[in-house]
Length: 190
Image 1 (cartoon, rainbow, N blue to C red):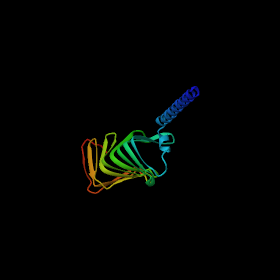
Image 2 (image 1 turned 90 degrees about the vertical axis):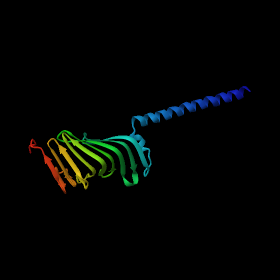
Image 3 (image 1 turned 120 degrees about the vertical axis):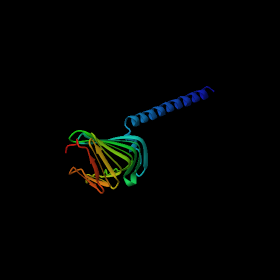
Image 4 (image 1 turned 30 degrees about the vertical axis):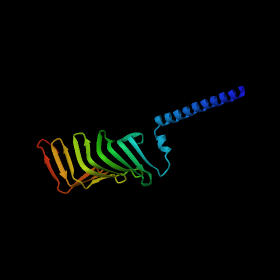
């Protein structure tokens, strides 16, 4: 009987040690994911679809911050190299200083080309200027922004609207297309 009790004690002691080791492994794994959330994405198999809540992503080039994107949610579709974003806010940091902020209800980002489409209550703010539209498409390689939806641009002393717009970022050129109308206050100097 004494050897039976001894075996039970050894078994229970071993079980307790295994449970403690398991808890430590789970805690260490959780802690590494909590301090490095990118590690969680690396665990996802190729071809899988992933949904994330509240994301924050910073784009840098040569050690300088170019933009910060936040969204309430993101759904990654691996086989299409696309991410669907909801309630988007992007802050672009300009080379000459200053910032441009864009908000939109939803959008798609091509995770390979960095091309982007956004739609729904789009507002772009820079200093005292405001641009509003319902759809924008950005082609990263061409540095081109286009929309076939109505555009409203306003600032201190002026308001302009048009049916569509094309912005060539490389040449710093914006073209308003179709039914362009504007009001300029007499205090505005050009």
